[in-house]
Image 1 (cartoon, rainbow, N blue to C red):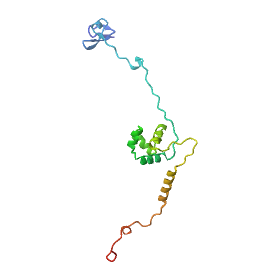
Image 2: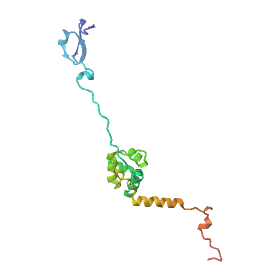
Image 3: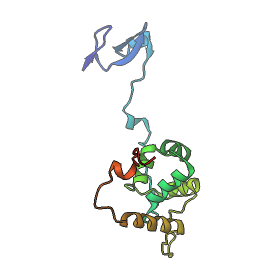
Image 4: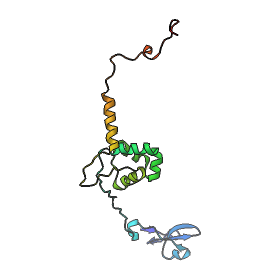
Length: 169
């Protein structure tokens, strides 16, 4: 049991504001001030705790070389990652992971990328993926460059420069 802070009577006490101070007083002394409502725990207030369902992203089937196509599209349109991320309203770090092929974009982001860069990265169901002619030509050109035989000897300055002599003007 507690006591009244004004008269000292034992018994139930009430929180009352008297001249700017909150005191614990008995029923008789409570008429000297204004009653103060005690804060109740959150659950007792009648509000249920809000729970949010986790965001569900739709899986989308992407073409195998989606990251390369995104990089090429950005190069063609002269977009930087920062600028494109701002345009698409996504985080730059997320876009960079998608560009590197580490993360697959969700359906909404893939559609945004397709529209902004004018590329096709979403593989339509039932259709086998075929590389575009430009992509096939670029891949063939890369293979040709890689297969070129190199000279056995390294290039020297004499191979490049023509030396003038007194006899040879």
